[in-house]
Image 1 (cartoon, rainbow, N blue to C red):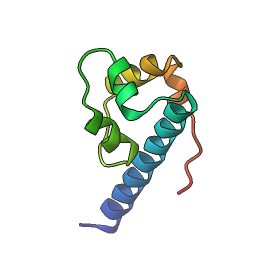
Image 2: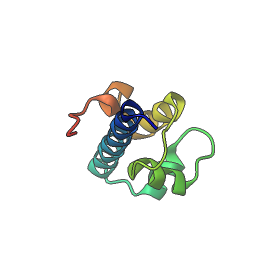
Image 3: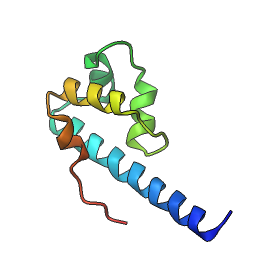
Image 4: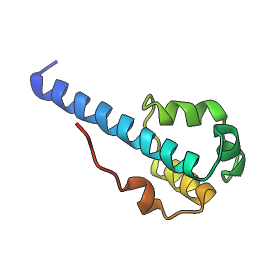
Length: 86
């Protein structure tokens, strides 16, 4: 693995962790548990997937982010607006 590949992987990992923390903040600000959020999402969505997203262990699709935003009753842009703490 090249140093550029390692840098890209680190950047991706940091971005996913930051995104997950943002989603957790927004969920908690609404007073929702992970179970509440999964239950409000369009279609079937497992609570363990919320946990994986919030911990940065998975890369959610744009459609999943849209569904989370809809469940939180916020614009998708609000999920994607965060400071990356690198």
